[in-house]
Amino acid sequence: MLREALNERSVAVGAEPDGWQEAVETSGNLLVASGTVEERYVAAMVRTVEELGPYAVIAPGVAIPHARPEDGAKSVGLSLAVLSEPVEFGSKENDPVDLVFGFSTTDSDAHIELIQALADFIEKPENTDALREAKTAEEILRIVERSEEHA
Amino acid sequence: MLKIFAVCGMGLGTSVILKSRLKEALNAQGVDYMLDVTDASAASGQDADIIFTSDELAQKIRNKKAKIVVINNFTSRPEIKEKVEVAVAELGR
Image (cartoon, rainbow over all chains, first blue to last red):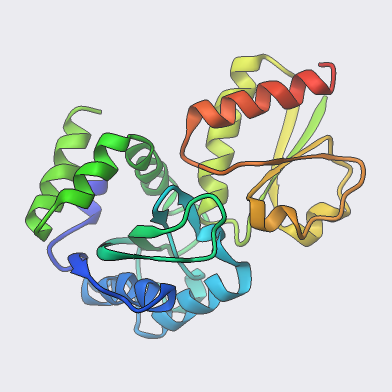
């Protein structure tokens, strides 16, 4: 499920964003690169975090920023930016963040299985620890693949 | 019947995860409940028994009747299970 949603264009390792806005933009630009959103979607992701606050940070060190389907989503999509320098989103419990999973969906149902698979992946510390150690996009994709074989 | 709300920003990301985790925990508890997802302003006017949400959104909810429970790690089944058990017990169900 997750492995099919990710590819070499939607995954990046070693990003060094200056603050949470750039971190969100990095994950959004990966969605643009893999063709699941229009460029305007990226700015909408940043606005969404501004409006709703740091609650996009769902687990220690992990954020899942997104915007609305009508903000330029073309299909259900997922991206992952692994940051080499963690950033602060303003989350009391879960800052700082170094794993940013951007996502897009075309309606309120299309992405549900994907998001649930993502939550199950993030819940296991061995998965998030492995992502933090990864040096290349290929390694990231292998970690995701292995986790789903064992699921 | 317990009236339970999961409060989220947009109903697309965190709420999807929270809803499925809450369902699992409530079903395991064997309580009679209804579960809905809503946003912070709508939740303030709801006739609710328990509201689950994030620390940041909890501060925006003005609901005197409901018990407001803050979830920190939305992916964590153990955290959500424990907080559901405590909240349900405190309501005497």
